[in-house]
Length: 485
Ligand SMILES: Cc1cc2nc3c(=O)[nH]c(=O)nc-3n(C[C@H](O)[C@H](O)[C@H](O)COP(=O)(O)OP(=O)(O)OC[C@H]3O[C@@H](n4cnc5c(N)ncnc54)[C@H](O)[C@@H]3O)c2cc1C
Ligand code: FES
Ligand code: FES
Image 1 (spheres, rainbow, N blue to C red):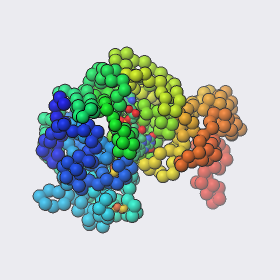
Image 2: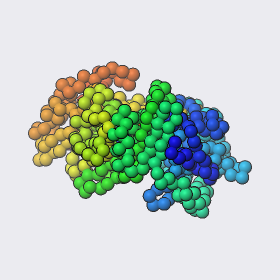
Image 3: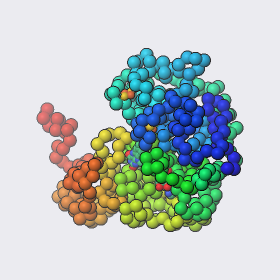
Image 4: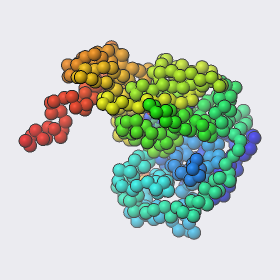
């Protein structure tokens, strides 16, 4: 091991030497540091019982705070960061204002979920985020309570007040974090397992090339589960998390370039600026803890047929930048997905960035996610629909679906049925029917094949209705207006 992992816990510098690099922060806390306030509910990022808060030094020198799931976070990912657990909150023996608000509002319920709720509220308070009900619901969507006591928890969030540690204490934290920023990358060797966290894109590219069978690690919201649920032995892991160049979003004028290390939360405003539909989709991707760790490029790289970003980005006309050593190549995003579990990525190559064009004004652009739960649920069907219309005719169409095939896939027959045709109901219904030529979806626990096809057809029709092209009273509000004259 080149040097120890160094992080802050309650203001003290902690060093970890000779540890298993895939040890989760949850197990580190509970078994090694005996901090048992952080609970294990699911060990797969779903329930929020293990929520802890990470403080991170931003490029401008300020500290950012994010709630993350400790159960799927590997211990080396603490390097250079400040960790806060529920035990960190007590000051001079007194509960923290967040804890006091929980007690005062009768929101302290079972001992499994409560620490996680407290930590999500703590992160929210430290970030200075608004405490209106909608913002708090977004912040708490990754914390599940089985006794249905969300009301008092939301009330506690509204009553918790401002961050008592803003100001001098936050400045001191920034100084302490600056003092532990490493100059060099992390290299851990432990009982046949290797973990590399280079700090430059060139070093990262060289490492991926040197170890073509290694697991590339971004946020770990998929990879973490390989360890906790599938008990896979990851012999070499190469982390993209410490490479500042990969954490950038660049404005290219007519497009934005999102680097491999950019998390959902960090991409939220840039993508929402391209089109508000991206913001609505991102809000429903996982819970906040997942969006605070997971990356857009990880969602693409894993090649899942049910990832939410690929259909949306394919519809937007995105392209993917792959890199091997110093050589890069760029391809249309849909060309990356070859077959189930198979992507167009050579050994030693990695996804460096995704380039997303701006959505031209006047285009019909809709992103739809259908899942059983509104928040924190995987899609049964996800659709990205982008249609150009001029003089009442469809000029071009880019339509992609997730959950309908073995890969995220464009609906070529549906697109062909639309292109050049008048933007009227008959065209749209014919295009929706053509989806049967594009997809033969499967039955699984999320949805039946019949449901998937029917839902996909309805989404095409819905995009047309929502484009304002329909004259019929189709919405509930329209129907009420008609009924009440
Ligand atoms: C509770 C929970 C809820 C979730 N909800 C959703 C959801 O609603 N919608 C959804 O689409 N997904 C969801 N996911 C899945 C997951 O969050 C996403 O797929 C996420 O984007 C993965 O990104 P990551 O950075 O965490 O990737 P990681 O877990 O680090 O990596 C994922 C895969 O991509 C590879 N990889 C990562 N980066 C690169 C790179 N730059 N180059 C090459 N290979 C790379 C890894 O080797 C691995 O195979 C959820 C996950 C959890 C745990
Ligand atoms: S234990 Fe459930 S999210 Fe971590
Ligand atoms: S607080 Fe644990 S089930 Fe509700």
